[in-house]
Length: 451
Ligand SMILES: Cc1ncc(COP(=O)(O)O)c(C=O)c1O
Image (cartoon, rainbow, N blue to C red; front, side, top):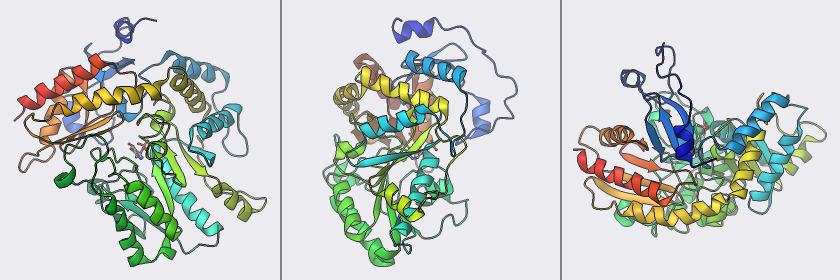
């Protein structure tokens, strides 16, 4: 097969120009600026993308935090091709197909002990909406129907459905979309540069920030709260690993008040911290876990929600012989997604990729923190193969500095992600030390060069 670099160099030439650029409305993108200087990717392999002008780009973010096993893995490609030629689609309601069951069992095998069921959807946003609805339905099924509030957290990202933006904590994603869901409240976020700047791994200070949930309970009363949803590591708003003990404390407070705890593991699931799920990394068991992205290595859209024992059975009991949950998607358990998911899990286990992620995380942390001292950098944060570099913002131009770093790094052949003035890294688990060096060297030189 050869190295991924050899393979990408053998790729056939692809279209190098795009014709009508007007019609496509890109998501989360300033479209006019993009179209004035488009970045077009035409192929990918292993750690690399190739652009329409033939340049090779080292992928330091796994696409959008999703291609954890690297791009175009031959086993995943083959599984999708085979499934497409065997059965393109199977109805999701009242019918199913073998791979849907097999994948759910395999995911339960990876889950923390005590999880029993997997519900499929097509994205992280749908997974979040599904989990919120499950929490409401469960509370009602156990005679707690007054519990209708959702509690999220500032600086949380839970996708773009009305459920996700309501519990999410990003002002730009919320402010133009009206009142959103009623009855939602937010805990404060956990970032504390004063005490925790440049922490290597999990920050020491801030466990007590979990007590913010007690403040919210005191305000609304526990009898009105269905669930709390948090990302174990808030990623999209700039990589915020939770303070030591914080998630454990949050779990205890939820238990005390009969509140379900949802971990949104759309990014942290499937090995990103070196364990199957973040729940295992932190040794905290939530009631529901949302997942997507690494579930299929990004190759076919898929999301899911995993429920602990007792949730499905409570709904089943209250439904009698009827439907337990009036919810689902045409493309739940899509055969191509299930085939991709099964092949992805095979690749993860056969190649020991979660273990590799844990091993590379040590070197990644070391090299990432060596950037300390470069001008503009006011914090560096990391856990697993996730890194965040926070730059001081230019006065009156928040985000401009990181955006310039992003563009210059892309020109130099490295793909990053930015949010505001924070640079995020989340490379595929197959990354090697030389590639980590190249990413950090490119970042150092670029950050040092921007004003
Ligand atoms: C924690 C979390 N939840 C939900 C989502 C939304 O996923 P999607 O974009 O697949 O809808 C994301 C996407 O980045 C995420 O990071």
